[in-house]
Length: 135
Image (cartoon, rainbow, N blue to C red; front, side, top):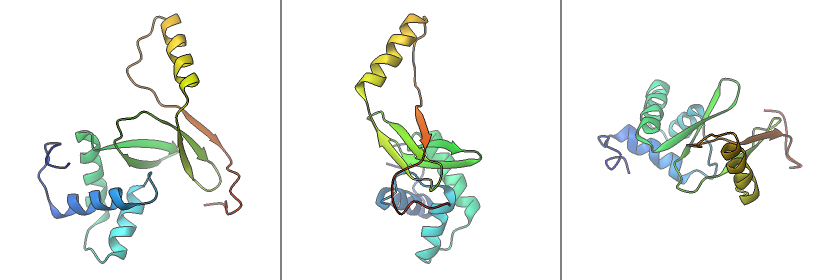
């Protein structure tokens, strides 16, 4: 995936991609990735993690989301479009797709004379998870 995106395969890039691919969480911050790598005993700086994630974003390997003020998370690029629900209490992110919402957006854009290239739909609220606590 790294070489296909036009990037040279390096140990830091391979390690960061492995974390993204193996994580149960689909939306990871640079801090999350750095913490996993540190726990694995890898010698890598936070600046390197952030720089590689930015390179991955430019290469189309990951997509950056800014769900909360000043807090970017990254997810591996997916072919299928989806939207997000974000819990403001615990930070949990859930993905969803709804054909009715997509059709409605298309109809609104057409009515307004607008050609959609991409869009982001994020719903903020509070999850019902009994384990939900403040971050």
